[in-house]
Image 1 (cartoon, one colour):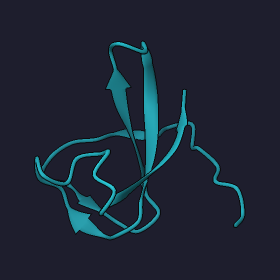
Image 2: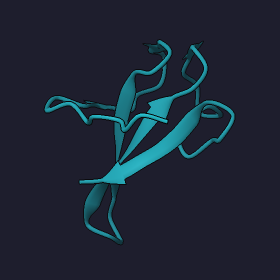
Image 3: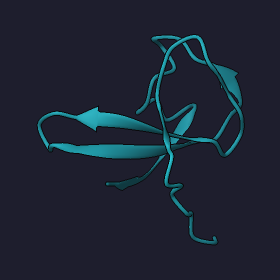
Length: 64
């Protein structure tokens, strides 16, 4: 599997947004004081139930 590149302008996850396959989002982790980056593995419109780390829609990539 080829490596994944994290973009410089990774979008913050929001509800009511269409996420296309392979798009990336960031989620702030207050305990770890960093941003976890996830990659979309299934195109969808986001709801509170599809928020990362939901493994049906997202794959963990890295922490920034």
